[in-house]
Image (tube, rainbow, N blue to C red; front, side, top):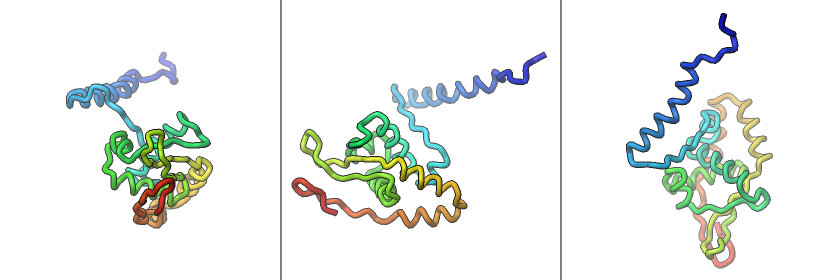
Length: 163
């Protein structure tokens, strides 16, 4: 008699097949070391696709960097990492800033190039996400639109950023 807690080997194999199939697809296109970003449907509904991808990577870098100072990343680096156009990156960043989930002052890096520095307010993220989970989807779509304002272009002057 089989145990009721026995794992169906067909399910396990199918789960293992997915990454292998994805790797094979990417390798067939000449991508030898495929990078994958996993984004949950809840994050996509919370922030939209670009915002969800960016938040996912901000969380990734947050735990690997200096949590009190944050990390820095240029728009070109984000574009390469996420495969998004600069306009999508700017829009996602503006939404996260408007929701007060991140702060992104422009500072000079060690090379002297002005670059966005990202600091995550994890408590604010938890508060916003908890609220999002209580709101009906159609109402959240309306709320999210209020955060999607046209981002101001940043002009960098010596030593500081001007919006």
